Length: 92
Image (cartoon, rainbow, N blue to C red; front, side, top):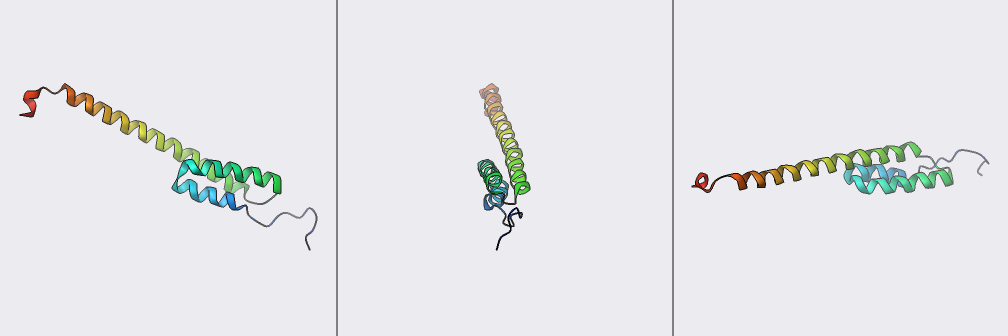
């Protein structure tokens, strides 16, 4: 028999899933964490901290991925520009 006002003992599955997915595929962890936080607020389940960690891991890793992509794009673009500046005689 459940007591009224007793804290929920179940951990929200979306919270755990958001942390796992955020570590593997960061952008997908962000919406899962938001869903988990909404469910936790509505149902009173445990796992708010896990969902917040999943959210922050997803955000931080996504920013790192975007910065790395921008850096690689810059280096590749600069390389193509630099190669275009080399005179033809240098290749022979």
